[in-house]
Image (tube, rainbow, N blue to C red; front, top):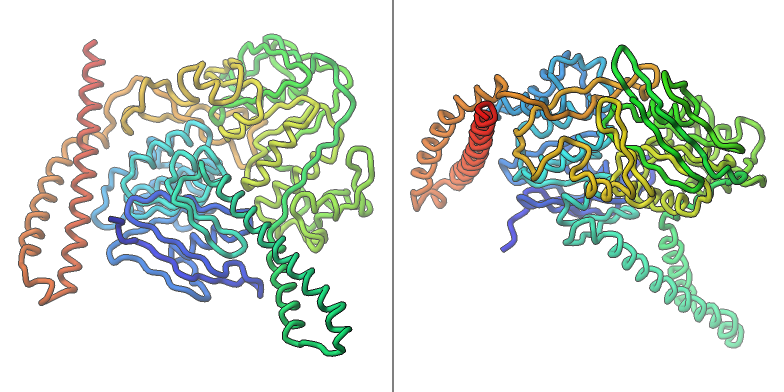
Length: 621
């Protein structure tokens, strides 16, 4: 028997600036459900999630939340105003009765101490703080908008484990395919203002989406044939009879209107890369290159040879030296020791994660042409800027749009358009997938597959790495890098574990303390400050908060058991519902909350007790 929904949206509609964004959207979330909300950039996914969270009121439709159900929403841009430290920000998200020690536990797991000033947080630190605040209360429903943005691979894999262990329901927006496939059990597709639901995780979405679009195409063909038949009648039947059948004329106009509306479906990105002359057989050869900052080895004694046609992926925690190594390999940074030799006739195009610093008052056309005319050179041939931008999903009307109004995804597509217009035989991409939707990622993959030159790629997107690279260079720590054949999954199979600490099997959520690794060089860190490095496993003992929880959780569990017994005694009254339905509902909600909290407390105490025994065993070994 299906559980009743905790949250329901029915026939939701919303219009922005006179243009309908959402026309008929529905969303239903029952206890424990895992729903992926997918759609193109600009389709209204984030807006629909805000409506579900109660932050935006729809123009039409109905929103219903079960009484007593708790909802927590993770925004893309958290607001830290009014909070001096990260811990203050996270603890402010706790409600009465929530476990105050879970905030510190999550901050520890995410590599934050809690005393960091909110005014100086980097993008990754902001995202980690917002995740801790959202997860700390253990709500009934989690609404997460791009939770993996600005996170490195160890943090993404930790978050997957944490979310899989939670008992609450989950609605998730993400451009990370592997993340969606791991966590989702149902998929809601928002397309042209309307939602469709599939009772299957994201792994089956693309085949389902394609079948829906193929069916739509067949319907359009049938409609087009019917229109042709009606036009034939219009040409000959009306003329022969000298009399117009206005009803049939009206039907024809209506069918043409329907066909036009159906063809308004968002188009596909068309990408081509301008290829330069063929490079030499050996593109880059590095011998024993090293780089240190402040006495710390960022890159240490790395040797690698990159041949023409290779596709090299570089992975590792934020701050592990990936960008420093990339800059040395491409000649942008001199090593402290060792040598780098670049091949002859090298034409290199770089797309870095800072996305360049462009004048926000420039228009799209000016950004593409440098303010010189209306044409851009693509593959040595002039192409009108409107035609080139159309290949990247920009409408002709947007060519004169100032850059300041572009979304993150649109800025990402613009930078790809700028980079790919330049002739090259070496493509260097530092986090190219940031803010790109799934369809654009598909076509970027196709572009790389067809690209005749050499590719060097830094990415935290495991699925993207699996699809495009031929070898993976992994930051192993202390400045060391090791190359593995194949993509990310191949690397994991050879290495025995992912980018995070080595584990034989999934460890308890409290099985390691996270520490902040040193940042990459400040001179070459991403814009906005170096990200918090991924936590590493170290010899440890129970933290102060963990010891406190071990001591206090038994008392809390005993109190919860007493509360449950009292509530059960009141609910045992057979006439309570008929006499006082409101009180019955309130007691039922309190009972459910108390039982859930007791189960959570028991699980947490058991984890800590197992950890204490494990650590005591290590100490005595």
